[in-house]
Image 1 (tube, rainbow, N blue to C red):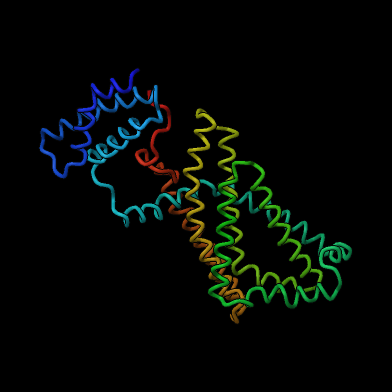
Image 2 (image 1 turned 120 degrees about the vertical axis):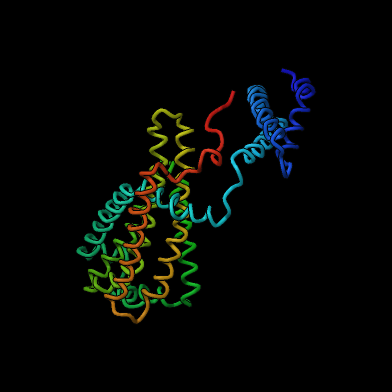
Length: 331
């Protein structure tokens, strides 16, 4: 097909569509004309895309049609409505979809971490191989581990912890499709926590370890499990795409579950505040752990109650059809 000849024949219709789509007010006749032009130009765009999908003409017609479609479907919701929809429907639905994988990731973490804690805590050779002399072990247990939570101003420490954990979670979601990134993150984090627990257990101070880990760690580690679950779900879409092509399955799941990474930014902000202001505080240990448990319970109520309701209503965390765009080649 000769694009230039096609443009010469139909260019006036395209210009008219663009004009009507941007016109402030339409009469009844103009609204009818806009609908007819939209249908005709949609057919033109499909034909052009079959021979020149990346052309400037194709991009221009797509923009004109998108503007026209907005006139048919009405004005978009305002920012506050979109924000409310995200937190009440989209985000909890995405969290709900990965609830079981989140628990499986947590179980894997506990098994690996528990194995390392048992090994380090019961083997003097392993303990010294990891931390060296008795003096080094004593310095870690009585000083370095505890001082970590209070050696910097609470506000700056909360910001550093927040950004670091948010970055780790975003990597788990984004690189989960590789299949190896998530197990690696889970294993390394479980190893670090397990070794630390083993050192405290060998020193007879396991209660001190839990008093510093549990207040913020209940939610912080759960956030890592959630991110890992989202990454694994994207990977599984590639392994088992169902009736979709693998590329389309990964695209759909990736678009749906990147919502998890965005939501975890706020979740990890809360856990970062707890880690900076509650964990090193002078509050009783039971109070600190209770605060951490309430934060975790709040997440699960949000994910299971609001998320379950949104999921049963047909929401998955994905964009709606108009915002998601084409899911296949139009011809």
